[in-house]
Image 1 (cartoon, protein in one colour):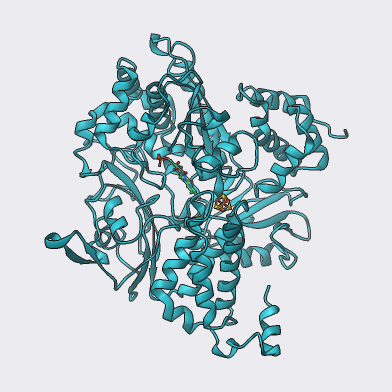
Image 2: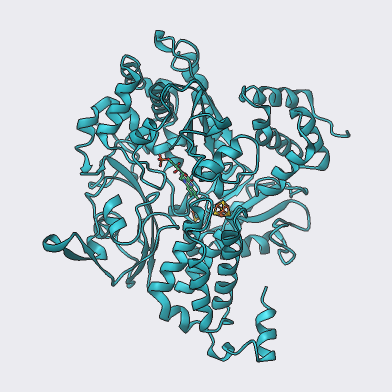
Length: 465
Length: 164
Ligand SMILES: Cc1cc2nc3c(=O)[nH]c(=O)nc-3n(C[C@H](O)[C@H](O)[C@H](O)COP(=O)(O)O)c2cc1C
Ligand code: SF4
Ligand code: FES
């Protein structure tokens, strides 16, 4: 491994531990199966297919692998929710919708190392007993879909997919299914509806937990691209060894995607919890732009609550309690949750002091208003109200009390909807209002406060689309 | 039904349908993708054709077409452009990129609405719309021209001159 050479200028940072991204930007690497096989490709599938399916799930549990798609749910536990003594077919779906703003990691696995994903999926399918699997890929990755289909055909020809794989009698077909530009297809039950050929209206849980009633109402496992790739390495290293990377309960490596106001945005595979936000920004991304100060960070995809640069965070309880600054936050699931946000999808968006927070939240509210599927009234109407109010704020045509209205609308969405898009849409607004209230209010116009009794102001407000 | 589907395209579509052994209806998206790729957009005839092919009521196809931003119901330009609008790209200048492409390609976006998001240039060569996060936020502003992905787009002349 030590001899791996990377393309000049794209070498991993010294703080990185490349497992999933081992082959990303690697010199003389291509997505063909020959290249993959020369590098020990499909060895873990051969190893796993000698094991009992239950043993594989046990290894994944021992590893402590948590889902990399957003919620951080333990993968092994999810798999064990499949009903026992089930006589229906089981399906596995790889979630390659990669649509959470700020996230750009699955893209590189798909384009540069498709066989890693196929191997991870084959092992996972063997573990859960799935003979049919789909990769749900967003439509905006046309080349990625092509690369995956080529890779699947290659794996077929070499006998890693198809009938009687590696002489085990196990059969598996994987197909690529392209979405059509809707964010809600990343939500697993919306994804399933979409794969059934319908509008991607999410299903209510309970009862529609995919592991119990998923695709075609059969038990279905939905996992993110990165999660499924990790399964291959868990088999390779053994769950126990794998769990020694990262930190307790936050095991393994994960890819952090940094965008926004840093000198060198990019992707970095790090051991979970071993790198702080300060190290990520200053050491790995070359710091902020010259002369700029940090203002805010969205740490886990656009749906994660924003952190303010001058906040402090209390971690731990009682005697062990300590207070840390934003720079000292270790980038792991549990710490970011304790800081009131989440690790989410690994998309870290950095904002410096040149950014207007009204403008930022308005941009995000435009996203959520556009992407709500429209099934639940609080989400459909609320996301549009949040957009319209912040449209007014950035246009200087909002009254100060609009900010309270904005907050109230957001708080009336989360917890009242079919799917977690409700939280995803309201958390940004709730947190921006909580943390940047003064700035939002400063962008409003007090003279509009009595707009409802002031005809002129009312007309001015109504003229806004 | 007026739609003329070349036999090669129909063969490709029939092959796609086999990827869904449990339910033909699952093939709605791939069938529509194939039709849109060939005809440029989804016409009423395409909806009828897809419905007949999949043994569905046409409304079951139409409701899909109208929901997903990836399907369009009117003809785009020869080259369709999608500019990422979302936060990281917006910080990197995607709204400015949109403006300069429109200026250069002579596209008027003033009539654009939520339900009719695409604007076409006067000569029909380019059409454009905003897209939400294209999953390349570290290299913004980004855009898709047809199936080609472009990152860190600063030079609009260089971008558009690739398309004749
Ligand atoms: C609105 C919404 C959008 C989501 N988008 C994605 C996505 O693009 N990719 C993804 O892997 N998971 C996404 N998820 C999470 C999935 O529902 C699901 O939890 C995940 O795919 C499970 O995989 P994991 O356990 O391996 O993380 C989204 C969830 C919500 C609520
Ligand atoms: S919460 Fe929003 S996105 Fe989710 S089902 Fe309800 S309306 Fe649709
Ligand atoms: S914000 Fe443009 S690619 Fe993500």
